[in-house]
Figure (cartoon, rainbow, N blue to C red):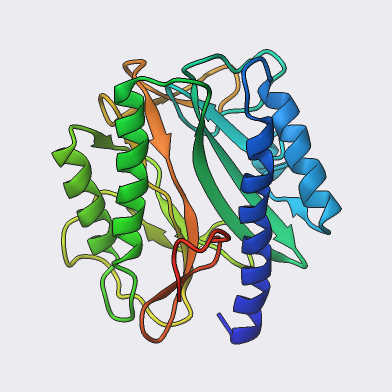
Length: 252
């Protein structure tokens, strides 16, 4: 990516991150996920952008909202109502002036189980471990290696049927960023590369099943909980910049 392109991606990524902060106030008991989707779409459009998922390969909504045993690509619905103990991932991708920014995080309603809390904390830590691997000349496999190694120490499995991806001027580009990989494998990172790291961890088996009725919703095969965190990252001359970080968690 050129410096001009990276600046455009940075602005779109900032908006995507801000949308996840904005929606937090609406995540509460009794709210349906279609309402959350509408609020996110309004926020994105009010800030001069459009939601990338809307109409993408036929996807019908402006974000993905995945509850409990849903791993990813949960379709917001009037019939999906938040209840105490629920955990959910909200995944937003924005297109601002032709540039894409992609991020997701976990939310929860009221008191959640000890297992759910551990899963959420472990998933975020796994993403952070993956981000710390980003630097010129490191190999992409090391991202998946450290993620999978840590997740296993906590008793969780890492979904291998979905992966991170290049992003910027298209929604999905090269490279592919696996979250389960061998150490010192894969292509090398280069300054200016932009991609997502978005590990999905399951409390049970790593595999998923896709709902036949919609062709999108991916669930755990055993009905146990799943969690995901995601950031968009650019490789810099000395390491990385987390473009979707709007809370200062990753200082330059």
